Amino acid sequence: MKKTSEKMRRKATRGRTGAEPASTRGQERQARILKAATELFLKGGYGETSIDAIVERSGGSKATLYSYFPTKGALFRAVVDSVVSNREEPELEPSDDIRKALTSFAEQRMRVVFSKRHRELLGLIISERDRFPDIARLYYERGPQRSHDLLVEYMQALNQRNLLDISSADESAEFFIGMLLHHWYIAQLYLRPTSPTAEERQHRAAHVVDRFLEAFDSSDRKSRRGRERGAQK
Amino acid sequence: MKKTSEKMRRKATRGRTGAEPASTRGQERQARILKAATELFLKGGYGETSIDAIVERSGGSKATLYSYFPTKGALFRAVVDSVVSNREEPELEPSDDIRKALTSFAEQRMRVVFSKRHRELLGLIISERDRFPDIARLYYERGPQRSHDLLVEYMQALNQRNLLDISSADESAEFFIGMLLHHWYIAQLYLRPTSPTAEERQHRAAHVVDRFLEAFDSSDRKSRRGRERGAQK
DNA sequence: GTCGAAATGTACGGTACAGTACGTTTTGAT
DNA sequence: ATCAAAACGTACTGTACCGTACATTTCGAC
Image (cartoon, rainbow over all chains, first blue to last red; front, side, top):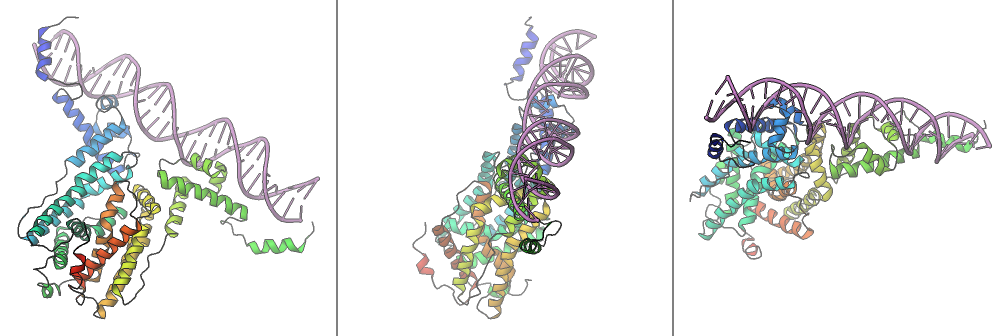
């Protein structure tokens, strides 16, 4: 056992901590594994995706995989965690132009929720809900919950300034999002649908905002009734 | 061999066909197996439920099971098929009292959709959507689709008689159901929630119908605005 | 180029499970 | 009581797969 100073220096510069990948090489390996696992898990689910398949796709070896992720479940957690965390955050520009703000929010939500990636993610999370309930909860809080809270906050602010006529901001937000998403959401869950086009999303966003304001905005009431009348199936 | 008349009569009444279970005994065995399989599949999912477990619970033997259901997948199909087919059908009493009709419809839908049985069924169907896409489609058509169509039909009728002011019955129905179900539906999917109580369901049904009529019923407009004002969180 | 750590490949242990084979027991009609 | 069909139970086959062991190769810093 010799203590050569070079090695000690090297070790010192790295600042490695037990868990985290030390070198660039390690990071790269780990990333490759995570990527392969993500693709396979999203496509095939947990039970149907074998470690061997992940190893083969990642190009690495089984032992390496297990040196980074102690178990299949841990790898799964890491995958879903990264996917959930790297998703587009819900945003709501708190403009005074209510129609514009709501429409933009609506379109953004639909773009995210009805994307291919999200569709795969949903199936995965629901399928493994019993095995990994904490993951399902994490998703719920970062996704639907967060989006809901954002909308509630905005509506409460508007309500206090009498720009909106709402008895319960909570319920109004639920209604708005329900109108917007529900129908396509279940189709997405049970059929294997194609995502709506940008046009369809815009169309729907506009209609939902119209109806919503019609029911909730006292000043705006009955204004655009004529315009809507013609151009719908 | 004596031919006593009683027995011949009995056999004649049976009318056995090749596939179908001949005797009472067979029917009973099959039913026991199906029941056990239903319970286990609904609770644990497809992959997690083993044939041996089903056999054990049904009290029968493996060979018997395989004599009725050629494969695990076939048994699963039979299970989901029976559960889906024996569900409560969506109903809509086409009364002229719009509020009453919609409210009753709404409460019925929620009672079904947020029942424990239905919650389990959803998870199962979504989880195995890739393995059994036809089953998912069957469920969708008999459940959400059917309920939607029913509502559309009703709304179109009302619209033609100018009792409702709707540009697209399709869209209106989507909005109504979305307002009604979406929020709790999602919670049910991602968390492991308790079903809403009868009171909560009534409360929500009333609110949804109110808001809906406010946005869509030209005659009813602005009538109950004051009443709603107080008693909401 | 040298050396140690990281990565690889392969093979294996252990286990869980779908489906089959077959000898034995139960059932229910005559 | 008798007899055939149905049900049973147990053991077995084959397979898929998680996780480990280990001997060998590659990499990257000096």
